[in-house]
Length: 166
Image (cartoon, rainbow, N blue to C red):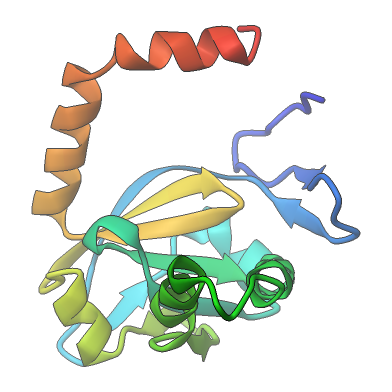
């Protein structure tokens, strides 16, 4: 089901098999990281994250920000995976070992722990990328590499779009 997404990216959508409603995060935003390791959340994302969020290590050496309702559903699903499955244990470690609940300060900033800044090679700037139900946080250099890969592999995604009926 398609829903109209307004200019702010703030329309609500339903997740399949999920009673919670989640906001659609869209766009790419570059923000400074201050000397204390704080990162400003883009203004258009703040209302949707005002109820809290979880920051954790991501895939591909970036960070992930999840709104609490989505994080709760994700943890429920990951926790249902078998403990004897090595890949499931690794996924748990990746998501949960470095996760921290975050709240924005009055200026809309969150604190990026030093260990997570090191994982994602974040120093003075960060690129926040809205990916529907969550946000990725990249170093500008790594994000440019991702954009270059996307540009060079564009035809690869044609098949995925066809599978979706687009």
